[in-house]
Each structure stands twice: as C-alpha cells, then as structure tokens.
Image 1 (tube, helix red, strand yellow):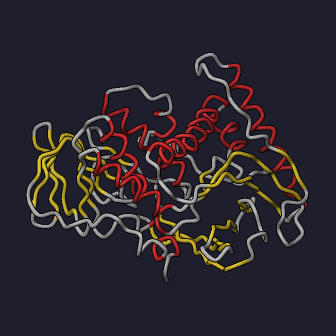
Image 2 (cartoon, helix red, strand yellow):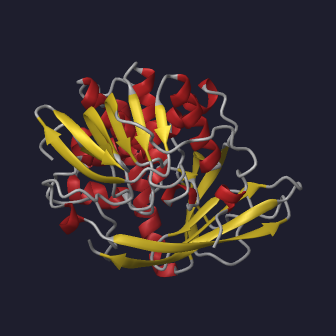
Image 3 (cartoon, rainbow, N blue to C red):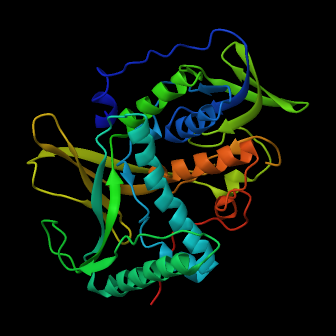
Length: 369
C-alpha cells in the first residue's frame, strides 16, 4: 500500500542522498532518518556539532511517512490518568512538553521557510457511548487543573495560554455522538515535506545524511563509539538510536517495556468544506480522522484505526528515542530537545518524565467508574 505523504513528494525532492562511501569521524551519529532522528540532528547541527544521519532506506519512508501527522498534546484521555497515577507535577510536565513541541515545530517551519501545509486545527476527542461522557468531563477538569498549576507554579516562570477545553455535543462529524472534548491551537502538517525541510537545514548546517546505509553494529571503544554501516565505520562521540525499535542490546530491558503495534489508514477525496478539525475516539477500538489539502481544491480525508499488537520484542553517551504510543509528531520534538540538552550538558526539566530507565512506563489505561 502507498502512503499519500510519500507518493505526493516524489517530484518535489530537492536533495539526492547517497549511500555512505567512506569512513567518517564525527561528533554525533544519528541512526534513523525519521522525524525524531532528523529533529535531533537539526537541533545539534544548529549548535555547531558535526552530525551524520544514517537510514537503511530513504528518509521519512518508514513510520514517520505512514502517520496521520497530528501535532497535538491531546493524546487520548491521558491527563486524568497521569494525575491519578503520577501526580499533578508529572502530568503538568507531560502537558507542557507537548505544548512547547507544537510551538517549537511552528518556529522551525517559520525560521527555515518549510512549506509543509501546516494548519492550526481544533482537536476533538469524542464518544458515541453515553456511559463514557463522565470520562470526557473528568479529562476537561484535569486539563484545567494542569493549566492552573502551571500558571501558579513559579518553577516554570511562564504564562500558559489555555487550549480552552470544552464539552460539546456536536463537532462536525456526520454521525451522532454523545459528546466530545474540543481543544484549540492544535495542528497538523505534511510530515514528509517537513522532514525534507529539516534535511535541507541539516545539510546547510554542514551535516551529512546517508540513505540506503544499514547499521549492523555499534561498539564502544574508550570514550567513543564505532558504528558499522555497510562496509564502512563511523567514529562518533555520541550515538542517537532513533529507529522504530531499538535493535542494539544495550542494558535497559527495552524488550520488556515495549511492544510494537500496527494500525491502518485510508485516504478518501472529499469536498473542501466537508470536514474540519482533527478527531479521535475516546476508547478502543480507536478511530482517527483528519483532512489535508489537495491540489484540486479538494481535501483528502484520512481515517486511521484498527490497532493491534504485532510483536514483542543505557548507562552511557548513547541515547534512545522510541516508544511514543503513536504520538510521534510532538513526542519527536520533545525527545529531540531532551537528547540535545543531554549531549550539550544542559538540564532539561522534562527528562525524568521521559526517562527510558523508569520502572513504570507511561501507558494508556482505561478509566474505571
């Protein structure tokens, strides 16, 4: 099956990437040319580090190029769960990190002049089950509590603009719902166009990107890393593993914390004014809706869902970025900033929330009455 994001950019690719052709010495080696790897490479190349990005195929053609590409902090009904499980401070950091990610992505798009069909949209989490309306109201109360906490907490020293969570009974969907949470200032874009914009900027900053270059091994020697890729070696001070699933058996027990999940999406051409906004169900089975612009003054309706598990599968300068629970558009930026700060020796207020070595992973849990 084809991805619209990938097929619609075949003729606009301005950069031709080559296979790796020799040995290299660099500051930073990023393994994975998806949105997380490119975002990390972008930030570090802007700071003057020598950066090499490696991908076993072409950039943006794997998970990042097969997504609904919603840039939102509304990751299902998560904030009530986070407050009840981890506390208000933890939940507030999760909220704030993703809110800042939306702003960060827009800043990159503006500063690098990336044409990627970025649009602000209202986001809706809806239910068709009357018995689940209380969950929506609990989530609204939780978001309001978080925004109040962040506004009053002097540790963050900032003003929080509200996403204005509201309970609505109509949201533009062509079928009856029992209710929905509407939030403002969320966004969507064309992810592959965005990734090519990042790649352009990385190249402009002196970074190198190699495609069709398969990494087969990473070895630590002294205080550096030796990366085996095709028939060549890269010596790097730091390695970031930003592939879909960690393939190196470093300490961390990632196999016990992660499982891969597959879902499906279909695109349907519709009239331009048929549907506006971004939509997702409140519970399983998950359905996701959004639209994107087409060249013929119509829009493509993207419907995603059908989630199912498809498999189960460190104390050093190497860094992992994975496990985004399908919210990789904002999480990729959150991860890129945390990783960049770690490498640059800067404190990041969100580090503990996303620490891959934590014993209890963040996951979606169903609310109970």
